[in-house]
Length: 130
Image (cartoon, rainbow, N blue to C red; front, top):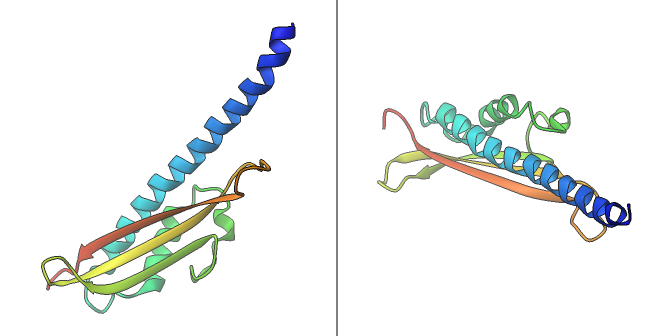
């Protein structure tokens, strides 16, 4: 019984950490996928390559499964989700779209840990027809 009283709090703390790490990894992978989806959509033409509103709509629809997705703003200009799309020159000199997605993930509250982790995803895709 004494051993259980000593080990049980440590085991619970470890399991909470694994659970929280799972949320973070899922969000990190989802953000990368959402950035690629938005880059694919904005790369349709040079007119849409810098359309952050289009990228925002794609990212918001792709990230509906994340916690606190109901708090995403419709413009994606403020936290917890920010999305931007830019027309850039790709590595080959052709026009490309660059989509950046940043998501602030709330974590379990421990006094010695930060309250949030920021996950960022980027995707660059050549504009089609260029």
